[in-house]
Amino acid sequence: MKIEDLTPENVGGLSLADLLYLRDRVTQIYNSRFKGNLTKAARFSSKGRLYAVVERSDLLLKNQILVREIKSRGQELKSVSPIDREMWKQSMKTLDVGSLPRIIVIENFAAIQGEYLEAPKTSDLLSVVFKCQATEMSEAAVTEVIEKIHAATQKDIACEFNISGPEADHVPAYDLVLVPRHVTQKASAPANNSRIIKYENTGQAPIYSKWNIEAERDAMDMEKREKAAAWIDEKLPVSFLKFRMIHHRSEDGKVVLRGLQKAMGDLMDIRRGARIPEDERRQVYEHLAKHYREFEKEPPPFRALKADRRTILKPYPNEHACRLLDPAGFEGFSRITRSTADGKEYSVIYGIRTVDGKRVSAEQAYRYPKSGWTEKEARAHCREHKGISFEAAIEKEDIRFKILKIDAEKQIVGGIVYEPNKVDTQEEYTDAKEIERAQIAFMEKYGTDTNRIKIQHQGQSFYFPIIESFIPEQPTKKGKDIIPAGAWWLMIKITSKVIWEEIKAGRLTGFSMGGTAKHA
Ligand SMILES: [Zn+2]
Image (tube, rainbow, N blue to C red):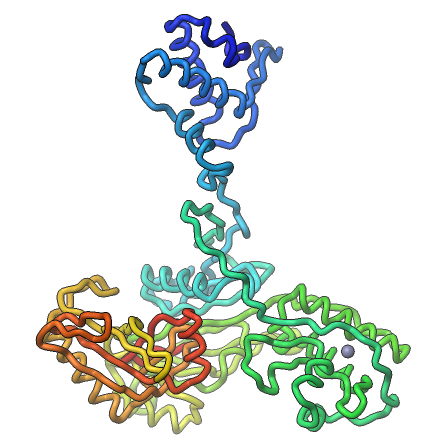
């Protein structure tokens, strides 16, 4: 009998030898044509002539018929082959995600470029270009790529986003791929981060009406602001920044032409407009464009923001950092070494941007190697040069504090910072003595430098009062938890409303403390 002719009705008439032969044939076909791929049908031809088409689903079905029949005759299968596994998976659920192929989202995606390629030994700065918009990648994914490259090269990493990809010679480092997951994850509804305000014709103010955005905004309550704006940034707490591109006036809701023009200008501005996702920018544009036509004016053409760039610099464990200008305004960075009058070396980071089509640079930051500069000296130099902020080099690895217990009423969280002889995140054992030393060092410093508790998601530091900090000599009960002997237990009061909301929502599960790691 041929495989194609096999049915549940006629299988009973076959001899065991025939069954085993067909079973071998089925597994052979599967292994040669379907294993490891998603092919739906295999075509068999000879000398240019097609003589059979075998469908995957049909082959699985025939295998099932054969296996059942063989087992019903008291025979065990010699071996379980891939076709059995697929058959089994399909009987368990309708879709096996593991069989889905990887999807390449963006080709050749994170690339290394810049001076590092020419002089990897002497260059301190390695530049990574992501070929996408910053908003297309999660902060966590970006951080991971940077951390991996940093770990491999020990270089400072500057990164930028450029939807048209690297502009110079480059070496692709990572492809961005979506990998199918076997683990079922509870999907949470995507957070509604922004809102586009619908267009509405509310009338036009006289064409030469004055416009003072601050005065207008101040005169409005929240409800009015919502109607007067074109876009709301839901990520921001209630503040004047939340309502964007206000163009209706407060007294009667009419559109003021000058306000409208200002709003359109903001939308097309590479820095202001870049906060808005590109597809939403388009909708905001349509809203504003309709108002232009109410004034019988032609709106300016819609322009995509060519490149959405952002820079993240690794924290510098061996250098003190002095910031002169906000890095957000620059498209790229370069770094040189310079000496002071008395021969002390330090590095200058130049920020590069395009002004009127020309590349111009400005001193954006200084870095002082810890080996040659004390924190005090570096700080003084920074102040002399009108630095806007200063970060001392990281002295030690950050201490991680994982929240174990939340007291909702008192707004207090507690957790074990270090537990003796337990592998920590650095994969090192910490002994009881070290824990004690860490606690003392931390508490001493906390007395004078209170911004040592750092929130993981926004790179901000906070001062939170410490309610309890102790290391029990015996295992100690704390509510439902047992604190092991020698572990460092810490409880802090969360005095920031924003952070408290994050913790309650389960989005924030820990802090890092002690280090002074900051973004450059
Ligand atoms: Zn409007």
